[in-house]
Image (cartoon, rainbow, N blue to C red; front, side, top):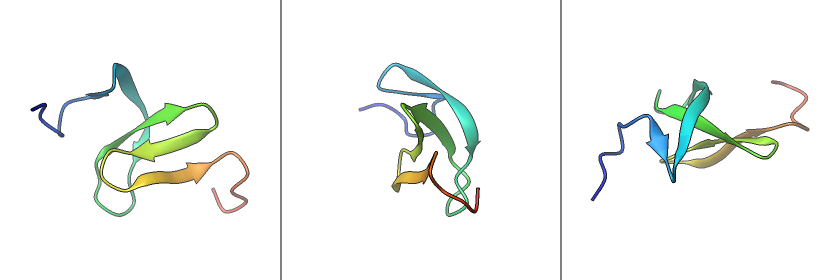
Length: 49
């Protein structure tokens, strides 16, 4: 099993900000930032981002 602290997830490198809930590196998928532990945290329609 892969280490969740690695900088990749599903072959996609983390390129976004740290997750505000757990500080894990998030990766960008389409128009969303996804935390490997919490799922989608931000998307492009988020007015508070």
